Image (cartoon, rainbow, N blue to C red; front, side, top):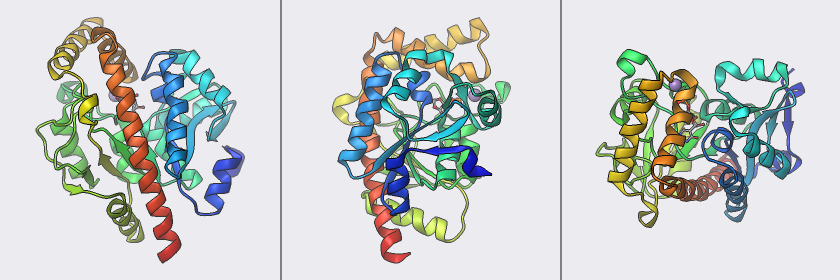
Length: 310
Ligand code: PSU
Ligand code: MN
């Protein structure tokens, strides 16, 4: 039975029972997306930002054979310290990591699944996975995209990194019927920078409008999530040339080393942080804060709309 697998933190369970706003947060970003100790500092600060904006944070991971919805500070610290030793867990990995009782850091795809199982509808993170450059040969397309087509959880992110092919990522989402919304922008942001040169489907300027769209989509039984693309604040943008050069150098080194599959994204993220001497990490942290703030506002609006209209 599902409830035998889930362990929901009491504060999260209480908020869910009362129909209050809850915001899901992922753990791959902690174990594989950032170095220690910035990863732990960021994860803890993010929980505070969610609370300050009216949503109960639920950082999600697999620990000791349980799907954990909401972590303690000790658990967040553990995932951050262990870093790469924690298994990166996407959809396919969930049952294995659960049964082996090893720690698993959940990606966007698996965080969506676990959030959905717990009844959480809004999830904020940094960036989603997507169609990788050269995917026509490598077939490297993140399971995050497929998850967005079937699990009813909306993801607030700062767009997709240009380690990915942003154009192909948008085409994939269009084909599979996933709405891509720009928060106060008509551009798909490129993670470290505000603009990618690609347009989003719709611009939406308020959390209320986004919550309304999500409620309507799900009321109609239109399966799947949505991508809410929230550009990094101007003052936190990274130098585009620095990022561009770091990305091409990182991709070249990845190809030379023959890195493939689930190692690809963590390798590129770490390499870019190293090449830009932490400048990219700084932007990364700031954009996550910004996404969590908007994510919490959307969660609050959505919970109010369900309470008002049912
Ligand atoms: N992009 C980032 N930071 C991250 C990730 C992506 O800027 O931490 C992580 C997320 O957890 C995302 C995962 O779900 O990488 C995608 O991995 P893959 O490309 O292997 O699906
Ligand atoms: Mn991949």
